[in-house]
Length: 430
Image (cartoon, rainbow, N blue to C red):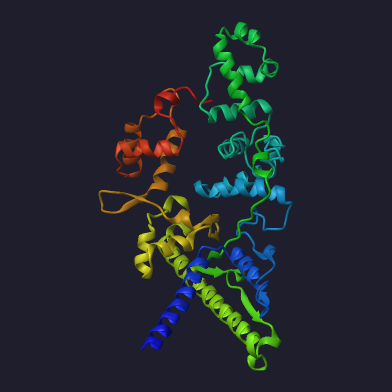
């Protein structure tokens, strides 16, 4: 009886070890999984080779304007790719998108625009008005200051982002930047008739600006985002293609495939290493199946986003996915952590698709992300002399988009967007 109990406990321990390893591997990205197996192979002589697709450059972006890994200089990829990835949160028309992409490609490594608007319009076969519209959008990307044509404009853009406003600020930057550089407070006080305290604050704010904002993206070593799957439209249907590095194949060394020739401690040792490989294969298989099921569920629920863009994003929670798949919420959370998919809208984190919702009168919900984007648009085009209050934003969301939302929720979302209250936005345009 004791022996049977011991055998059951031993089996349970082995099953728990296998399960723990499977759960542990869930949180790894495809690249991290390969690195993990390679580390194990250093201590397990039975592992001869780990087969996966080594050619990361074969991972192609959906848009020809978004470079594939390895196609261009790494520093450029880091800055330009990060700027382009920010565009997937913006609802762009087919007309303006290629103009914006051309503008981003025309930035130098410091983030400044290197071509004239006239040449830009000529290259894109469009008007200077459209080019100016594209530039204005580029200048809203992070870090602030990106897309500036001069140092003066770069500083001005950053001061606007910091909500720092003086009625004479533009003139000071454009005409008397040397006074700021030399900290000539007397000249500024006398010319503009302001107190020394105001000038001291100007010096402090300008010093906080970065003269080369592009370096904030390109100075650090690039961190490549490698997607787990490619989601694309084929003949009107959404398809999911999982990349090969998502499921590495472990090959066993030929001389160790037959253990009958090994005796004693060597046989015991190799047997344990075989078990380790079996557990590892099961864990890799479990990770693959779980990841595929979760991505398939997300694609099904966010179908309208993949077809039409960010304004069609639907509310979705970890709990809903877990219920549908019969899994624990923590399993879903581990599965989507640091995982990305490639789409026509860019390379997107799976966590992005988990969105809270605001209940509407018809019983449906609107994703919080969509409401925030609509709020940003309303505020961007408001009359800067009569900025919209939270109550006015609430009313316009209902009147223009049919969205019902509490004023308190508007305030919360506005604060999350780092947008100041209307009284602090007055006169900040230009």
